[in-house]
Image 1 (cartoon, rainbow, N blue to C red):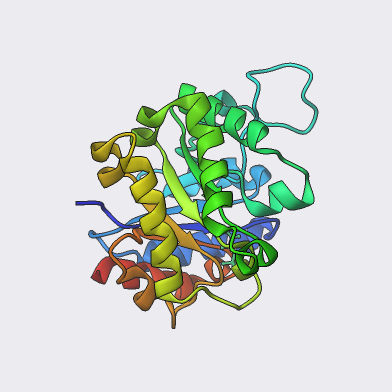
Image 2: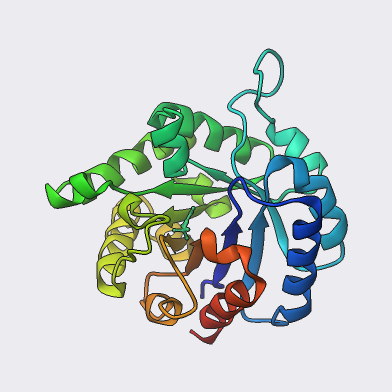
Length: 251
Ligand code: PEP
């Protein structure tokens, strides 16, 4: 039985004050059981968020993690640093990193590997662009993104990781995949993993991400292979995020 997981990706948003208020409101409305919840603030707010979340069940995450342990990597933050400041999760391979900052499958795999080595749970994002979907390449693209990581870190690493299927055309666009479209790809991912290891495939959580909101969350989370969500814009409003968390819990 996979415990649902809902993670907020705050992207590059927030101030000290808004972070404090958002976390206060999330903590006040959190269900006691039935769903795991995480938040990924910008790096600079991680110490503040860690202090506020101390003693709660909310998992703290980063929006990326360095592919190296230390040294001449200007602008990067290592897995050990994130651990030291209370992070449990790290998003890797988000499409904004891949498309806006040129992160390749190989770099994403190296980041994922560092998270695993240091006991951070990577949330590996995969997903196709609109053009790739319209030219029938969805499965091929997702398979390539997955294989790059598993080729480096191995299938067993997925016992300590989470996958997020995030069709690029649905991220921040207000255009969500239908539950059936999302389920089709989640099922494909699970079957592809099962070809290597059935137990790992059965237990790994696969989140959906892409314009999830309070209205569409229940339909998506009702699908058998959708184990929760990675939530961008809607995670910045506590009441909407909490409604999505509740929708995951009910399933
Ligand atoms: C995301 O950034 O991972 C995401 C899913 O964004 P949004 O929910 O805003 O589409």
